[in-house]
Image (cartoon, rainbow, N blue to C red):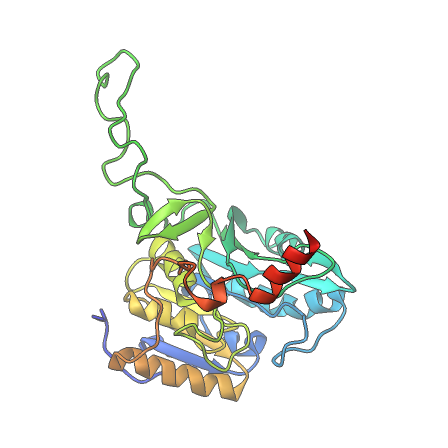
Length: 319
């Protein structure tokens, strides 16, 4: 992997000249060291209030109020032409589902941000439910601070289904190709297959036990999910910030593509893992699922993909 910048150690605290910085502590406090308007892209997945080791579960209203100071700092450090990608799932209380993106939307709207897309991230594996359908997606809200913002459409175009389609209306372009030679504009629901940005879902495996990026973090961001946003919403040299950076997946996505990166994290264990992962990126040893790698599909020959003999026997007896 070729880096556009110098390969240096991760800076402690905010350093405008560093390629990567880690701010250790609570994001609402540590972000005060970042200048206003410094970040071209803020991308993160905040705690979901579901009682993971790194969070204290509270009532929904208290949870949202506790995050308001971070939200305010995030909007302050976002560049006038910058983007915010806020990725969330659901809060569940007594088997009732509360979609967090719906609750966060008015926070950012009141602060003047404008929603550009509500993007679905789909994955095939997750927690199973018994009293409702098992959840298999989360939502990424893409906001901009203003009407002028970076959007590199050509970086994320998908191959056209009918590239040979021509203009049919009378006029100077009659009979000429009607599409773009670089491909079409993808929808706000994407699926990545065979290294193509395909219309459909953002189908990216979540980081489970057999994922090459798996660390000690229980709810880890796939690097690929962030890479797509980095490519589309920033330019080389721009600053990407994650206020809940965990084990640095967002920072790694930024660094892989020649952007600068800042992360905030209060857990010392995650900070230590983040430093090791960034060092592994520079040494070429980082565990990484390549951008656009097809999602594995079982052939049916694997033992785990076959119907257990006990089930066949029970079915035969019932029939």
